[in-house]
Amino acid sequence: MALLEVEHLEIGFGGAPSVVRDVSFALESGASLGLLGASGSGKSLTALAVLGLLPRGAQVRGGTLRFDGRELNALSPEERRLLRGGELGLVFQEPFTALNPLMRVGDQIAESLALHQGLGTEAARRGAAAALEQVGILPGPERAAMYPHQFSGGMRQRALLAMALACKPRLLIADEPTTALDATVQAQVLGLLKRLQSDLGFALLIISHDLAVIHALAEDAVLLEAGEVAERGRLTEMLLAPESGALERMIRACRALHGATGD
Amino acid sequence: MARRPAFWSGATLACGLALGAFALAALLAPWLSPSDPNRIDVAARFAPPGLGNWLGRDELGRDVFSRLLFGARVSLSVGLTASLGMAFVGTLLGAVAGYAGGWTDAVLMRSVDVLMSVPTVFLILAMIVVVGPGLGNVVLVIVATGWTGMARLVRAEVLSVKSREFVWAARASGAHPWAVLFKHVLPNALAPVYVALTFGVADAILMESGLSFLGLGVQAPTASWGSMLSSGRDSIAEAWWLVVFPGLAVTVVLLLVNHLGESARRHFDPKGA
Image (cartoon, rainbow over all chains, first blue to last red; front, side, top):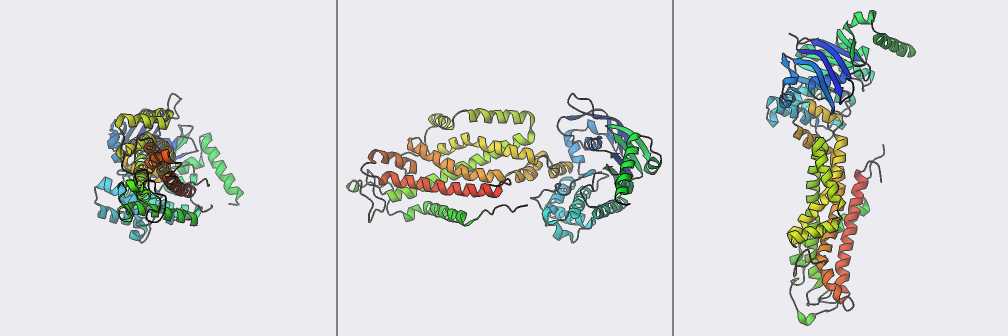
């Protein structure tokens, strides 16, 4: 049985036509899957639906979401809340704004540890420091006492990763985790994500519009276009023989971009 | 990015110190006053300012300087407590309205609209008539009518903060909605509250003076700047010092508080002065 099963998912806003239609995919424990698509293709909404964090007005209209065999939409809001940050981790796309500027970085991680693992203040603080060291932010205890503005962009992204992984989730959803970073830092964060996955064994759902990012982390991918699955399969095979217009356009755009920079 | 103006400029510091002096004088009134503020000395009725009674004596021979000092206790404490009360109620309701949205928001904000549509002075007078005069009631009534502006400010700020990513991140890590609101959203939405808090002090002082002037605030013989103005009004032709000094005290304190509020606004408002 797969860890995450999404079947015939349909999401819509109010009375308007659905913006995500008939999206299905499955992710095995410890495996990786890329969710590929242009802006507005519905990939972020799909992730938010898994987390139970759809914005106001949006609702799941049909289909099933199963995590570890549990029907997510049958759970109470309280049960879904406790799943978030515990077994389900999320990394955000904007490292510059995804940390509370008025809270010490360590405290933000400790908050989650105290909630999900019932740790006391001191133990949670130590756990937060350890979580920071795990993502290569050293020395943990000192860095944990700093505020986000004292961190560089790459450090903040790693701190977010530490926050999402602090409670040892079984599934990590990474929504455009490197979009806001420059290429060097991007490569570092992707490498770190890959290493952590092999160390900790979480399943990874990586969401991006960037073929290279998906390619670096996942072998299988699902391509969304305008809210529907346009193509799915092994990424390498998909790239060699694109079947859908969406993927072809994406590859062409990618070539044009790199060609223009003399690549 | 331009650095935001520092809060403590020279003038602001001077204002702060002056206000501190007022507060200290009010605090130490029992020791600083040359005489009991309520001691009547008919022989010294309308004694003009001079040696022994620096600011003169009133129609009952009470020392104006002593009464000013004790009046400062009333004005400053009402100003501070009423403003803090308004900030507390307004922040709480505004934050809940902004964060919860939907029906909660609609009900709370329409109540604010209704309260704001009635002229404040009229509302305060009507409420005082119901609950009766007195210092505690004055604070209560000022808070009950004054929290609305604060609630609107905080709601607007919460609306903008709650869509920022760290709030989503907190929700994605499973934080309870109350924890998200009070630990992540509210602390980042408080800047306008500090500003409104200072101006609220000025408003409350003015309102207390007005109510005491009308006889609806502090009751005789307790001294308050407003009631001193009111009782000195009858003899303004013979004894100018009875209205000039309390009037000056109100004016100066309001100017000082407003200047502080202005500095706070310049400091916290990212759009610049």
